[in-house]
Length: 427
Image 1: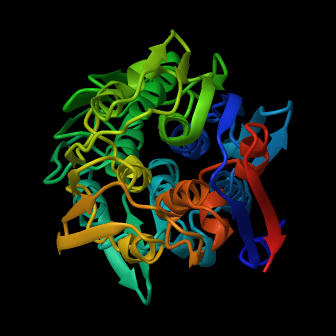
Image 2: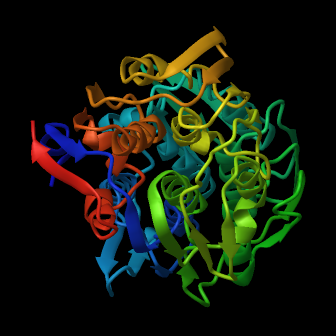
């Protein structure tokens, strides 16, 4: 189904119902996208397993195919990627402008071809997301940067190892510059790097293939360039911690008893502590979480941070939970500008949220939410609207389904398995 068709769809939700059962977490969106990009670094095909079937992954496949690469399905969630077949260094403008993570392809393309052309990447509208941090890193590796109309053109006869200090922690910049440095001549050292599990997983795969990366998962990464990579073992995508956290919030709000399977609780330790502080009982296993709705949710203060702190991607869903907690909570967003722009829609549902400034809101909990028709502004706020709609009595309609599909695979069918009354219909 194409993007245009999906943009005409909406979710119809009947709230006020308790949910129960088991739900499985899919492969991590942010790990899968970087794995596909990494295929460009190889001179042979690679195999990726446990891919989520979500819109962002489909768009990444399209970008690779437009570059000349081949993508073949070899199993239920497994793909053979012939990134070595890529013959173009020009990223499709339409897709790249709509998808922020398209920028991770620039590192491998520059390493492979010595040249890359791309537009300013787009994606969810959650404030300013400049790419200066990427361009400065590429310059230090030896690339020259030109502007041709709306496009950036980067050229480098060869990439040479360098010391790169990120002024701000960035997951995509860490991954992109790490991949660009893998085939560079000499040693690169990246400082103030992001520490997400997806970065460590990518580095582990590249190291298994012959790369020389040390420190992934810490604030300093050292990369000694190699001449080529040799595929040895399939890249198995780790479970999506944001999806697991989203389901945990759903269970805390409405679950008689919900078991969240195929997740790694170790990737959510700080988030789970916040959930416990809000009065939620959690049973934790090696690869599952079991959660029931709290009889009495408590107000707590939350401040988003880079990993391993409270994830910004779980901020909007957690705000939906705090509208049902007793007392006054304060939520501070420190990672992205403009990520609190959704709160007026929750207030129209009956929430009592006051925005103090662009980064901070006060939530007076215990609200009786009522059903409404809403437009999803971005992926994570859209999921927050869904959680609020499940708490509200009556029929809610959420437009902008395409944005939610960017990160959650067949979300309505999986929630129906828990007893949720949700349908996907054409607008």
